[in-house]
Length: 188
Ligand code: HEM
Image (tube, rainbow, N blue to C red; front, top):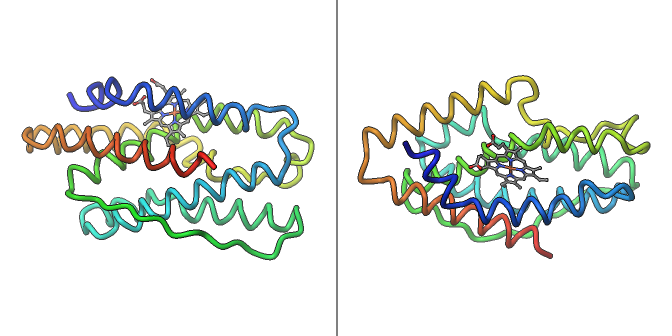
């Protein structure tokens, strides 16, 4: 099974990211601007990842219903109105997906990130400034469908590796690469 293998090989990356994000997102003094800046960094990371993954037609199809960019854009737009900013610009980052297996590893990381979202939304909704604006589409992701979307993705990646067992290592490498990329982009 590939999912437990990825999980074991990326545990430390997840732990580090979780600590870093909890510092910001679970801080009771979180300001709309600090939250906005975090989402901007997420957009920088995800845009470079998704743009690279989309070059693979197989993954492009998967991204039709799994892209997170529109969710990030909705939140950024909503916060821009709240903070009084006009618009945002994103710095472009290089990310190179080397194969379908490598891209699936990266997809695992982006899809897995939706699992912690429900806990994060709970914390975010406690802020008085968030109660009227509800700019947490990105962390809410697929909402009630999150479990089903994850299950469907895991079935897919397990089938892929069963049919292409020689690709296992590349899938794990792809997940590590994506974790490193996101971590680097969120560290500013
Ligand atoms: C405050 C931040 C975060 C919290 C509280 C959190 C929490 C969680 C939780 C509760 C799970 C489900 C664990 C399970 O069922 O075994 C999970 C899984 C996962 N999360 Fe996070 N997460 C956070 C941030 C992130 C970020 C930023 C990423 C990557 C961009 C990420 C990637 C993953 C992945 C890939 C999984 C799938 C299972 C695994 O391989 O461990 N998480 N997370």
